[in-house]
Figure 1 (tube, chains in turn red, cyan):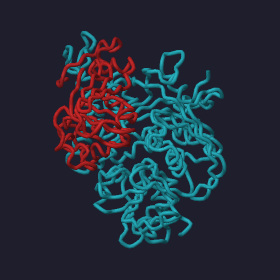
Figure 2 (cartoon, rainbow over the protein chains, first blue to last red):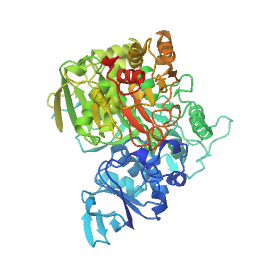
Figure 3 (tube, rainbow over the protein chains, first blue to last red):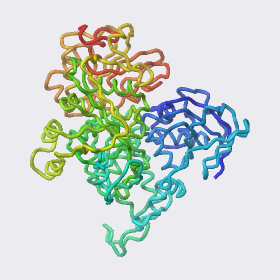
Length: 174
Length: 448
């Protein structure tokens, strides 16, 4: 899968309260949450995002609470992928589980605000089209690739053998 | 090669013969927890999946059920716990709707451990108190402070809503077996210094990502003497160093607590007794180890806007406060309220300062009333609130406006954590918080 978008650069230790403040956790709707993405630390952030853009951040991205509303808000405001030096544990799980594409790369310092990137998720190659440079990202272990390929954790689980009696059936269980 | 206590617990919940750090496993959880923020998302995900019922099974109205017509049943209604505690008692209409989703799901699924307002408490104080977690358990919770239960010798880890939804289906969760870091604390703690100071000291040393994807195993003579409430406070904040879990090997103090909450007879008591020798092996492999003599440690305060930004309380006497909050899943237990009441007894909070005390559970609330602490807090000019996570995460019951400064016994001081992005949150133990409420600025308890 190839992702192409403009960079929004963030620093280290961006926490989930930064990404979506608790006062907005009364909704589970990605678009609604997306309207307030990063509001506390970058009040103008959502106004600058065009659909398909990419967040590039430092270490420990998504630290703090377990709120899955954080990756949902990122998706909901139009961000297509996140690249960071490292991700906090729960955010990492959540991004895998809900299918928010992300990559870990130690080379993010070279990437600038507004750069145009092209990411190949299959091999972790990040092309900086603005600077005409390439960076490599950590490849996902096979286990995680399976979940990503299945389209997230719930699809992966329902396709597994030991859940043969369970099938996805859209939004209307009754 | 030997295993750490965390590796042993994870291994015992799989059908594998051995596991190694770095390996991905699927494990069966003993408990799956959600709250009024995270469970509604999990329930929505879960409801997208339908169970095809056994052919010919008859529904309650006598009509045979067909494929896709039966709401899914959770894997084990005794192993799912739902606690509306974050925005409960419901702070507004939208949060009332979220709480309703939990109540309806609990009813539909016949979930035993649903705690309505009145029986409710802050989840990470409530579950141990109800005897729902104990040594050797594998617990996941859609709340980052699930790591609190490591204080009892459980492997407990925060996950997201989709992880919880998946556990509802088959009781399993995926884990990457984490490496462990060993922390050994030696010496004897000073007066006014406890678990909160030990964990702030540790996070101050290693940073907010110092234990990223790792387990923090707390040990040494100081931990062996540390009361259970202080152990909860320590393990609670393991996540603030990025850890997947914090854990303490169970000992006499653990089992004394377990006897209190599950009794000495019965199946739960028998289950946990089996883990009386649950320890890390002598040849267990740790990624790193730290050994600190903490005899000279004094009460600490984490300054805005990271829990790792730690200074001595005595260095911060010029920090004037608008609000002091005593409570939360970190420090809202009875011993926390006891030390705060001891300092506040017969005193008044500084004029113009707001003191908000919120016990973590209804049981603690009642104990605080019986022991006279509630009266001490109210007579001192504070408020004594019903249990809720509210103030800690800027939900309700104590929001800060721009420019305001708060000292809280909670666990996070991120930008805007308790309200306005222009407010400031400092973190400390309950003794420092109580002393500071009297003086109106950050104060070492010795100064009272």
